[in-house]
Length: 430
Image (cartoon, rainbow, N blue to C red):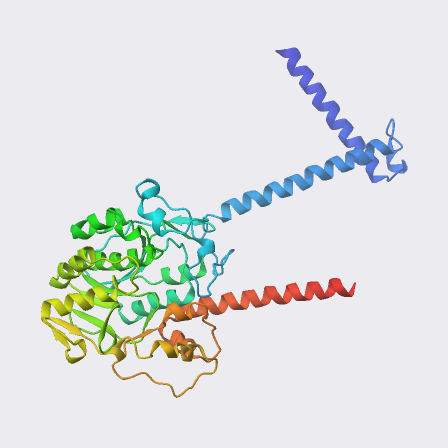
């Protein structure tokens, strides 16, 4: 034991002595100067090698320190601008959807409704499960393509509902199980106390709807059709509202005023055409039972609109023995709203909404509470803060936090683009 300690001590002393020699030598440069005269020898090559080794240790130490700082800094709150920004332009963020869990094997609802190529969002955060109380005031938005991000226009729909209804729970239920923690749009929505962002599993969410739940699990809506996702969305909105009660709104429906006060209402696109893009019903309302029966027993997988707006249209006509919807405003306790309530602009004029510098004198009908953006046609038209369009002015007033986030994203992207252009021009000049 004593000899071992002595050997280690001797080795350490010898190493430190040589370290001092080499350090002093390296002060002398490539030859030994006056500071090195008292040393027994001075080998410039050994000094040079020692200097490189020491520098290597210093660099490694700095790198290790930076990594430790980053690791601990990662536990802090998210930055105001994301490290990776989800595309805020109007598409269903297919490039950032993630691989989700659940379903019944490869034949499950996720396999039918979700895109085949899914990627994990940057810095993913698992969402809590969808849960809504029938005792609360609820507004529901459903994202049923398994996307883990929303574009700005979708997010504006959610925020606008929350802004005009602070005493409601505004549910954003996604069929994705995760979102990106650095997504600026998600961060903007999360600052509202009454917005609840959750994951919705088809197998769990509508257990109280019986017949509809069984029909969904049988996967009839997904067989032999290119519209499986649309069919699922039509059925799911009916099941969610009927299971707990509340209001359903499409993700391209911007709210500009408080919703109608009636307990049961439905919007209509035209006087003779009801819509399933905006409706309110209490739990287990008579229209729930009739619409569920109509959907499950008369389902047509490849007829556009038949399983969505057509379900309510046929159910109301059957129950109230109505031949022409245009002639009626009520069916029992159900209020059928005027088209201008949610659809003040005809779909053929959707481009008017996005025209830069659009008419400043534009005004909505007095009874308008929502503006449908007709996403089927306008999905390629982004929200551009400051362009003076109708959507620009409307979003600035009704979804201010999303508007601000998009403006910051655009500034960041413009800055990066300018730097890139400046760098390229410098390279060309040299």
